[in-house]
Each structure stands twice: as C-alpha cells, then as structure tokens.
Picture 1 (tube, rainbow, N blue to C red):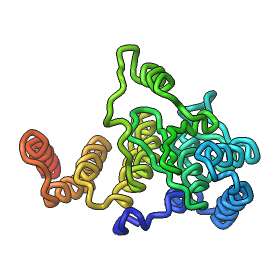
Picture 2 (cartoon, one colour):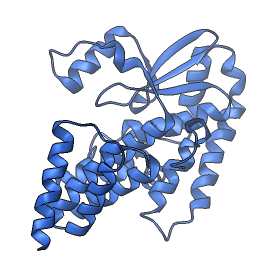
Picture 3 (spheres, one colour):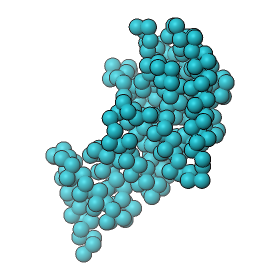
Picture 4 (tube, one colour):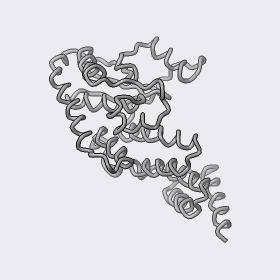
Length: 264
C-alpha cells in the first residue's frame, strides 16, 4: 500500500488492515462482509442517484439509518473511534472513520467523493451531475451550506476563525488514512503512552514510506522513550531522505549528537 499509486488504494481495506494489526484474533473477513453489505445496500438504492441530493440521501440511509452508524460524542477521544474494526462493531466513530465508510459506500456505486482538507473535523465532497455537496459524516451525512461551514470553523477553531479556501482542497486516499492513524497517535502521546505513539508513527510510515517528516517524528518519540538505537535509526533515515535544510535539519543533527554521546 505504501508503494502503490494513490488511486490504487482501497481506502476501506486500508483502514481495515491497519486496525487488524491491533486485533490479530479478529476475522477480517467478517468486517469485509459488512463492507460488502454496505455496498450492496447502497446499490439497492442506487436508483436514487439521478440527482446529487438523491445520492446523498441513499448513502445516509444505508449508513446512518439502516446500519445505525453515528458520531461518538460521549467518548469522542476513545481510540476505538479511529479503529475500523471497533467502529464497525460499535457503529460509532470520529469523522474521519465514518468518512471512510461513506467514501467506500459512495465509490462502490461509482459516485465521486473526496475527503477535504478541513481542519480538526473531517468533511467530504460528494460530486455528480455537475454539482457538489459538502457532507459531514459525523452528523449523519448532512449537507452543509456556507453558514454551516462558518459555524463549524468557529466551533472547532475558535470564534475568530474564518473560512479558508485551502480547507476545501481535496486530499488523497493516503492522506485520509494518515489522518485516521494520526488520531490514535496524537491521543497516545497526549496520554504519555510513548510506546503506542511510536507504533502508530511506524504504521504511518508503512502507509507513506517516503514521508520525511514522519521519520523525524519517529526519531523524536523514540528519543523521548529512551530508545536510543531506534531514535538514531529514524534520524539517519530522515537525514538520508533529502530533508529540508535549516533549523529542522540542524535540530536533528544536534539530537543525533546527543544520542551518540549517550551511548559512549
């Protein structure tokens, strides 16, 4: 997956494979059967796809009514909300996890849908018939207008936030999967679970092996863990990957020097 072209990545299968790393006892085929059922149920309503609003209705009907998915407001920060195995079992998740299920369902019908670069709250853009809708998968697939988007920006970023054109740029499949895993990594590091944070960082590198910043991040986490050998290895990978010059490179070189002296 890490070496594949982005459009060759099956986003739901990718999210499932990442989750199964934490559930070696789980039969992944059962989850795949559920994903297939979402696609089949959407196909049964595919006749509503003559309009963009009909497409949005059909997907929302399948995901949020028939299969009972919802945004988890009560335990939003629970890492299970970004673990597709547990999201499927619990029928609850954070925006990006629910968004992946929405993308899977729409794409099973050949309908165009993309994740957006909206900060702090994952949104989707559903397209068809020369029209576009901005969809909030956390709010049962509701379509958002400009006022809704402005209110959402203020809610997640603060009352002074204003909409930025860059937030509505599409992101690729790899970036969506990275955003999913980063939710788990961030919460682990916030809780001081450095080993778990390092593991999530390594999974992100599996998805995006050419990402220079992820190698640097892994080195920093491993250094804070006191895992000197792994930190040195990650920093060497960073420096050999044509990283940016300047302060970031200097910082890594200084960290490497400290780590080498710690070994002596």
